Amino acid sequence: MSFLRSVALTLAVACISLPATAETTKWIPAWYAAPQPDSGDAKLTDMTLRQIVRVSAGGTSVRLRLSNAYGKTPLNLDEVRVARRDAGSRIDTASDRPVTFNGQTNVMIAPGAYAVSDPIDLDVADNSDLAVSLYAAGPVPLTTLHDIQRAVMFTAPGRQTSAADIPGPAADLGIGAAFPWLAGVDVSGGKSRATAIAFGDSITDGYGIDRDKGATWPDVFSRRLDEASIPLSVVNAAISGNRIWHHGQWARFGEAGLARFDRDVLAQPNAAAVIVLIGINDLGHSDGPGKDQYVSGQEIIAGLRQMADRAHSKGLRIYVATLTPFKATVFKGYYNDAKEAERLAVNTWIRQQTVFDGVFDFDKTVEDPSRPGYLLPAFDVSDHLHPDTEGVAALANAIPLDVFTWAKQLKR
Image (cartoon, rainbow, N blue to C red):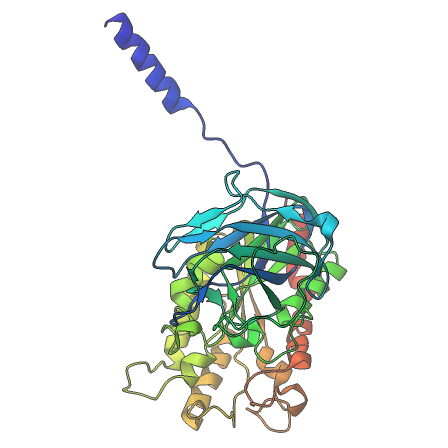
């Protein structure tokens, strides 16, 4: 063998043998919004968006996840900044930080892709608010968003990402109160050792409850864990109108739960558990046997089994909640007695099965004890389907904390 060939072979073997550089920072998801498609043609031009997010876990550094999941062209954002929120749109200016992506202050995200920012040194408290400000010179299509605004968003013309305050009414972007692009906030250096993901539909997403108060049941549950010194972050991966088996009848109802489970649950860094409450829309948005999108109780059960198998295959604990009451709901065609029979069959199976790691009986928590199948009036947002702010707090308080004490044994 020639000398040069010997050297080349030695170098090749050395390169193959070199270990990949491991990521040493442990990132914990502290806020999440499952991306949804928008079928409109709204665009953003020369405008700043300041989005408020409530993180369930704190730390000494953060990173952002942005999504162009439903974009047809690359998404260009010219500047992104993050700061601790003071009040309203006002930020703590001493905490204001530029967000970079591979060292650059602007970012381009390919169609269908995510972008993860560089780490940002920023002290963040558990269950506190951050302000994420994004500027686009545009025009940029608003095709990827999250429909339910759990907090609040402020807008301003021009580049005002570092402004201390953004006063005045928000501009009409043509997307209602939705969040564009921002999909996640991760933290490191804090108390939380892993994340529990709440997966479901509008009852989890926060439809009809008080905004900007951290009032969803995952928010309330997060605070309970914190008060009990259980080091587990909670993020909300729900989509209003979501179903297990079918994509949404309206674009913003999102991809089917089984289709997005990998993206919104299994792909989350340091996920340790998932709590599933989904299936009522499979019944409500179904026209009945023989129709294209009819889903039976047995098919809902089969879908839940799939989620359990997939979660367990990735080492996650998975908990399931019973489907809540919906008799007399105001949504036309959503309820009938045959659908109620299917709901009761699903709940009977949930209470008896051994597939999941635990059961939370949300049905009995918010049901009117004097009228089975009806939502308790004191918990009714007024549509006889969605629990109100007090109702979702009751759901959070119905989860026994001792089920999650295993989180104390996780390694930091």
